[in-house]
Image (tube, rainbow, N blue to C red; front, side, top):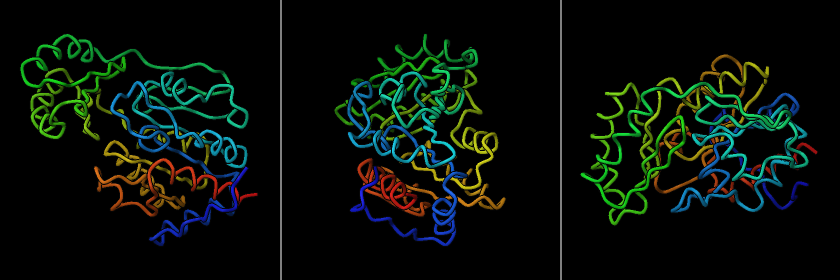
Amino acid sequence: MGNSTDPLPTPTTHPGRDGLAAILAHPARALIALDFDGTLAPIVPDPEKARPHPDAVPALAALAPKVAAVAVITGRPADIAVRFGGFAATPGLEHLVVLGHYGAERWDAVSGEVTAPDPHPGVAAVRAELPGLLDTIAQGTWTEDKGHALAVHTRRAADPQGTFDALRAPLTDLATRNGLIVEPGRMVLELRPPGMDKGVALLDYVRDLGAESVLYAGDDLGDLPAYAAVDELRSDGVPGLLVCSGSDEVTELSEKADVVVDGPEGVVRLLRAIATQTD
């Protein structure tokens, strides 16, 4: 249930105000799309221990039956996001969709299955070469093998930002030689195939769904393509609301957002406020 003590923020832009108004006026035609890490789940030193804010799933479950769909769009494998999120078999989330690997994978609650393409061959080549490169250049990193991508985290290093900066050029070279790209994030550099991004995933799903308004919430550089997708939709007459799960590590999103909230806790409050307003 919504919490009447959660105020509904006023977007700072005219397109944002139009987007929120459209969602509230016709929630059954709206798509609510959200990133996972940093948006639903607080950022933690060990990505394997990331879990949603305690009130995030209840807030989604309260809102989901009132809207056209809820989608979690993440760079993580879809099954990992589902497991860490506790999304499966949750009352209220019967039609939740998780678009993993930036949309290359899809899990939906109706079937409980993940559909995915074969991995890009460059991923296997990078997987073989990456340990030696990291041993030479940087200590204290941790590599997350996502199957379709590899993410090098520097948050555990003695100098996280310095290690991030030192790795950016050699990892970009490694990725380019193997037909991949590097996606920078919050103390993480992800090597993944081109053509996989949250903007493509969001546009495809909005069009498949036939959504007439959209909210997208994110926190990191990997969410910028989704922001651009919402801008494209707005230019095509589909109202949209851009939400930034605020962080002092990333300012690019907050500068483009219609609403900035205080991390996952703020996202939860916003979801509850929208659910209350659509009662």
